[in-house]
Amino acid sequence: MRERQAVCRDGLLQSTGVRPKFLRVRAIVLAGVLAAGALLVSAPLAANSGWTLHSVPSAHFSIATPAAWVAIPQSRAGQQALVRSLQREGRSDALKVLREFVGDHWQHVASRKLDAVELPQTLPSDIATDVIVDVKPLPTGVSEDQSTLKQIVTGLYGQLKTSSGMHLEKPAAVRLEAGPSYLLFGSATASGFGGARTGFAFYLLLHAGHIYSIECRTDARFFDAHAALFRRIAGTFRYT
Image 1 (tube, rainbow, N blue to C red):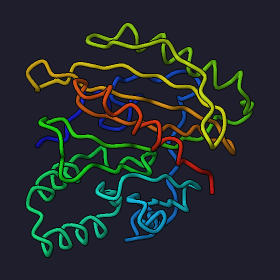
Image 2 (tube, one colour):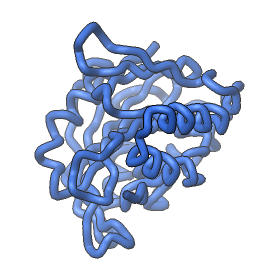
Image 3 (cartoon, rainbow, N blue to C red):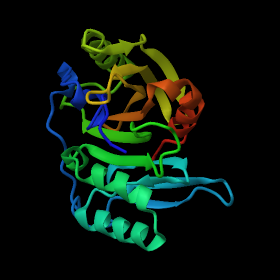
Image 4 (spheres, rainbow, N blue to C red):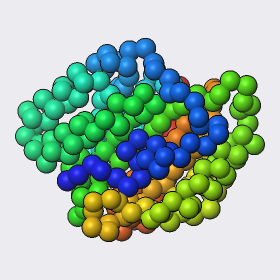
């Protein structure tokens, strides 16, 4: 199992090198980013629901995933603790995937606030299934409204659609439970995977002076079968 994705070691924007005008801003380095357990709290979403709620107080959001998915801690100490837990449980398959994720330097980019991955992978693929939440500040003076969001999405789409190996549908306005958003979805060639492709669904929202992105990824062959699950995951996103 390999973690590498065509779309986005650090989310769609970073992996493609895209930097729309509104996104040319430095990442926020939040206090406590290296403190074990300081950024992420996971708990059962509801009794017998089969889902887990991941709360990230420092970035003011929460999102839920199926209970089998594992949120990768940002801190080294948190990652080591998770490795020890999986070792005690004898989950060698999950350990292999986890070690490749935590060895990827993109996991330590300050704007990445959550990466929850399906462990163990249930699909017959080397391309991991996961969800990433990335948070960046809007530049000072930029208005936080739907016209701004539309301009960001339009610029992003215009740049991505010309990228080599990218298949991209036109952006669609989608209202999530957390508020209005835009959805981009498609697939991209996964480098080093023998022509395999990564399918992705990418939601963008604006809130409290920040750009929030929710990106769900899987092997493109199974994307249609995962579309409802990805929409459900995005639908659990809340500001806190």
